[in-house]
Amino acid sequence: MKRFLPYLKYFRPVRWHFAGGVLAALIYALASGLGLPLVTKEVFPIIFKSEKSLGNEALQYEKWRAAELGEPFQEKLVSSFTTDEMPSEKVSAYQRRMTNWLGEMEHSRLVLLSCLWLPLVFFLRALGGYFNTYLLNYCGYRVVEGIRDQVFFKMQSLPVSFFQKHQSGDLLARLTGDAELLRQTVTKVSGDLVKQPAQLIFALGFLIYVSVVEEGSFIAFISLLSIPLCVFPIRIVGRRLAKRARVLQNVAGDLSGQVAESLQAPMEIRAYNLQENVIGKFRRQVKDLIRYSMKVIKYRQVISPAVELVAAFGLSLALYLGSQRSMSLEAFMAIGMALYMSYEPIKKLGAVHSLMKQGEAALDRIEEVLHAEGELAEPLAPKTPKEFSSEIRFEKVSFAYGEEGGETTLKEISTVISPGECVALIGSSGAGKSTFANLIPRFYDVSDGSLKVSGQDVREWSKNELRDRIALVSQTPILFSGTIRENIRLGKPGATDEEVEEAAKKAFAHDFILKQENGYDTQVAEKGTKVSGGQRQRIAIARAFLKDAPILILDEATAALDNEAEARIQEALAKLIQNRTTIIIAHRLSTTKIAGRILEFDRGEIISERAEA
Image (cartoon, rainbow, N blue to C red):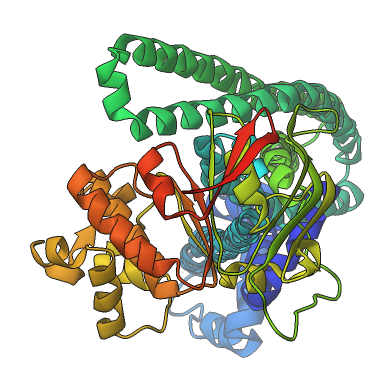
């Protein structure tokens, strides 16, 4: 339970709803633990005319006479029949018939009122159960909303390296599936940890009362000693369930990751005829999911029969001991109902215990994100140069991905890129070009050495202020769900429509945008699949034009363009890079023509440096 305490803070905005749910739980518990046993003890004997409830006819008549008719009425009734009008024996027989009739009439009214107690108790029980479930589920959804918001917020602050270590589908499963399981756990726990113990307390209170006032009933109270025995199967099953639940959540995350991976690469799968391999892997993971799901179900469902078996022995013991002490059937029925209401909370708390183990497994996966170290922490006192200069200086910079001791990607790089200079990075794949560029906007932190922008180490910059001064066009640019206009405007959120269109013209995107069904208001699908690769890249370039940042990073920005479009983009880029510090990651020689200097990388080192002719 301690694992969940830090997350109870999310109940604060809905504390009154939570209080209402707790009050409803107490009403439910009162109606169940005390109301139903009382109905069994007090109401049923009246309905079925037990000797205890009715007594003999004379006693009933005397009660009726004293309470309803009063003494003068009977005297008048008897005196009205004189011996002249009716013999005394007939008067006595008439009085007996009158007494029986009046007693039956009073009993019918009493039975009617007694029968109404049963629906009243069940009405209160249903009302309490409904509002308890409704209000606490509302609170649960607010809790999961807060947790998801915290997890998503944390994801946005995590370094790029974190996402390279985890599948996107697995992270999505943590944000949705694990958070939903945690909601169910918090809702169920917060409800039943009030409702069930309260019901148990009311039922035990009734048992103690009956044991004290009812002769021969105390011995049946001993049967409650079987309740502690219910704890042992719950604890044993709980430990085994926890292990299976953790594996189940991991398998579910892997399955989500595999599905997301296959959905992101439909063309590659078909191009290489990987359908059978993908389907086979999917089916194996589904079988693993089913296997561990059944293990979890097996251990969760074994708790209820185990508690019921112990309860049956407890009731049998109560029955035997009661018969030895000549306990009446009415007393045993009341005690049996109270015993049942005592065992029922134990059974449900056992189910809560098993759900908590699953919730802990989900919480482990969520906390892996929440507690992930932000490798790129903001400086305690961010600094901003008074006068910005777009100079970039590498001073013996080394970098390695992953844990300490990982393979070094950059080795003691030292170079200076002057303000307004355009530098092209060339070399084979894996030589370190992209890593070199990604260190500038501080997507990663250098392992050794110092990287300075405008004479200030990037680790002293506020990340937002540093990145506001950098525009990036990647090799595979992403278009977000929305219109083309909205995607271009990401470069400058407050830009006017005219500014957006001017940026598109500079990127040679304006003409093809106007040919779309709704022009700039055309909706683009996930990853920009409604436009071609070259068109998507030109929209991204238009975004960079609009941002108008002093530092520009182009990562194979013309890779998806045809020769004609590339020539036009090269012309536009030649204007864009004027008075801007530009870094171009290039494989095509044509891309390097606009660069003033070329740095050639190999195995993490700059092996040559030359000016472009």
